Image (cartoon, rainbow, N blue to C red; front, side):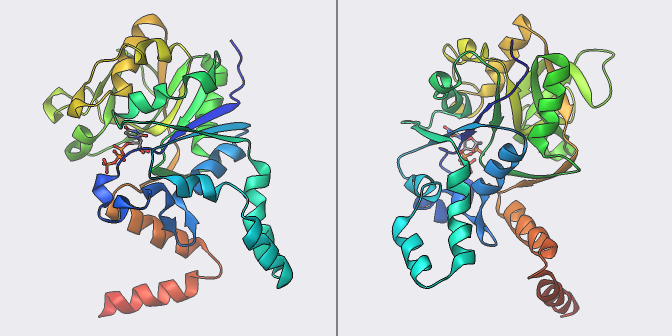
Length: 292
Ligand code: UTP
């Protein structure tokens, strides 16, 4: 099988109930971290990692995502007329670089069901999967590039992981490494979705980044509902492990859960503190708040 990962799938069709009321009308993936929608950070991560073709999975009220990755000729001609060339380049740059497709998930039956909507796009090659509400700042390398490197070594599915506190294991898919495995790259015995703490085999949570072999679709097609009544990707990965090797790879970097309000605020502050045009003012503001 090919060792190159050319395609990325980004599911962005969920309801985003943790971020209501805004998500009633606005996709959480379009919530801006300062001035850039969350989903752009994810697309750029994949682009920097060598991905050539993108598929974003959307639902009926997420047309803003389609518009965002398209050209806006009216805006462009206005900017040209007013000689706002920097802004013109800003709105043109990303659409010109992307080979991007969209598919609708008609019913929000869960992440596993969303990924199944990518079957025709993916075909018979391994692919990258990046969840639409997890943003990473990788140490040295983008998060998905770290998994692509691991895939080049193993030729197997790779689940990007992060270590979570005991109180959080029941919110994630959790990995069970084979006995004797240790280090950052480990072969897995099993995975379990949202286990109770006493049933959790480890604290290694699946963190929204995957490389998957196309055999996953065979299992997704017959996947029954699992935790929360949803069709869970983790349950199909568990079945895939019985057929072929699957590995976990610890992601070296910082993850922001944009689907939660606190994660979103944390990302906004951290990203502002990294921006030359904002950091001094924002730091000043934070200092004055703390001293109040
Ligand atoms: P989440 O469970 O975090 O997203 O799914 P959600 O359901 O939108 O959010 P909450 O929990 O109600 O606040 C992880 C990813 O899978 C996508 C989501 O858009 C998100 O990127 N997803 C989830 C789908 O595309 N379709 C689904 O049916 C479920």
